[in-house]
Image (spheres, rainbow, N blue to C red):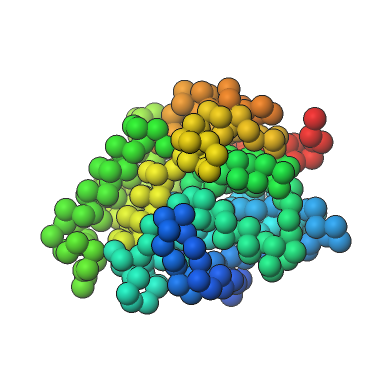
Length: 358
């Protein structure tokens, strides 16, 4: 099935840009202690909700945001004819720190702005999300955590940090630990930005556009798959050439603050559920400790999170299903950017949520 016009590319672009809107809510965390030992002053968490909390508080589904995305990133899963029906679930879509909506280098006042923004771990996001759910809604247990890419990292961390607090996990195109190849890839992405002379060690007066252009080409090359490029699938987005693919990603990169991009990438690089207190870096033991039922959905052609590495992690789960997504859209398949992939994910997630745990 082909997406008919350039409108599809614009829809994809908008879905990957963090922006505030009338649905956005802000939860104030105050002085928030971080895993690094630093304090994030006047910390804020951005989120939105869909549906109503039931009387016993057992219908909550958490959707943590992903890299280059925000609380709208899962809209393709939400609706009366989708896996996440607002008539059945209370859905909380939350923005990660550093995405420009929650506390970030770009929106925090001095002296903690820009490169002085404190180091953030995946576990810091989970801790903040737990406080949001408890303080704002009185929720202590989750029906499910569903996450794509860095959202998958957060889903796994929820299962490790709060094994009795979540019934089901759906990590999509993401891992419980960032393996060395992924760390190296992200380092190349970061260097594309930081070596631009306009970056000025993070104290830039104007965006480092040359660096962001290089970063855009990097992202374009890795975001889908070799087969996607061979069949010139960019035409399904209404794009006419490889150069237009680069321009598409350049528009995406320049819609973000460079320090936000770099800070989030560092959080991604440092992800490891084994660093949860009590596991001494042993991600195998951490994964084996998860009590929730897990629907683990990699993409067969994902170049960010290779399916072999994901299969290795799946073998460590006590209650895991490993259901690869058959698509040549690579990593982007997990965000439902092609209609066939969105349909696959909606069906798989709906079946998983409506099947009782063993």
